[in-house]
Every structure is written in structure tokens, then in C-alpha cells.
Length: 147
Ligand SMILES: *[C@@H]1O[C@H](CO)[C@@H](O)[C@H](O)[C@H]1NC(C)=O
Image 1 (cartoon, rainbow, N blue to C red):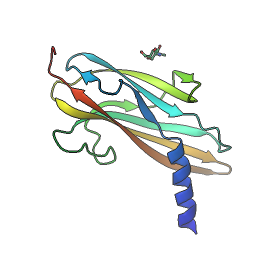
Image 2: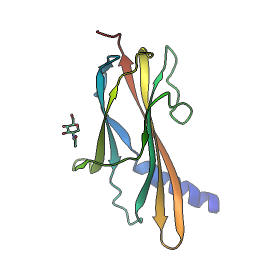
Image 3: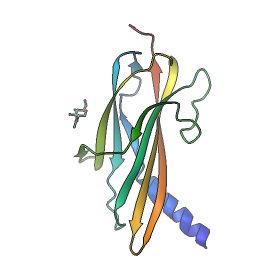
Image 4: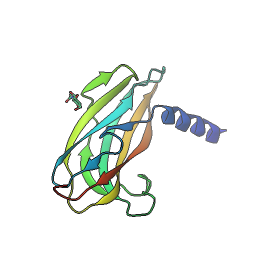
């Protein structure tokens, strides 16, 4: 019974999944140049109590010719560790977002993936806070410097 409750909770969290909105699909990142990574977090309009930010980790992992690793298994070269701090909201869909600007690392080339891990707490009535973690990934191509 308890297991079912946990499953239902995971499902509820999965519905409000964060995602990488920028760079655009098919973008080629150039080592040494800036890339704008925009993270979106859907606004939870359910009756659940507040979500408290814990941490956000953004990395870039090389994939070579294999399938890119799942972010839960490998976050790659870490570009950011901190907190998600929304800078604004979009209305369609109803999201908050934060822009990050990174210098594309020069030790990664070819197929790669932006990997994101988001840790948060959902505070519930009474002395309860439920830990949550969600992942996102976004395939990119890293070209050669100056390309
Ligand atoms: C975030 O980046 C987008 C795309 O470049 C830009 O239109 C927007 O103004 C930026 N927002 C903030 C708050 O920097």
C-alpha cells in the first residue's frame, strides 16, 4: 500500500518535469564560446504545498558514438552547481525559467548531452518535507574551436 503511494507521488512529480529549452535543437556548440542554456520548470498548479529549492546541477557529457548516458548515471563535466533561481515566467506553457551562460569546454567534442539534476523538497502539512529529484537531458553537437 505504501509502495502505491510512493508510485503515485513519483508520477505527480514526473508530470511537472523540468526541461532544457535552449540551446535550440540541433545547435552546434563551439569550444571557448558562450552557450546560453535556459532551464524551464513547469509551475505546479496542483493544491500541493510549496516546493523548496535544494540544488541544481548542470553538466555536459561526451557521448562518442554510443548512446548518451542517462543523467542519473553521469552528469559529465560540471558547468554549474547551485540553486535554481527563476528569473521570469512564460505563459504558454506555464513555466518559470533561468538563463545560464557557460563557456563551452574545449575537452569535449562531437555528440554530447547537457545533463541536469534538480533536487527539491515538497513541504507538506505538518512537520513533513518530501525529498524530490528530477533529471533532464538535451542532445547537442560540439564542433571544433573556430568552426
Ligand atoms: C533569457 O534568454 C532569452 C533568450 O536569449 C532572452 O530572450 C531573455 O531576455 C533572457 N532573460 C533574462 C531574464 O535574462
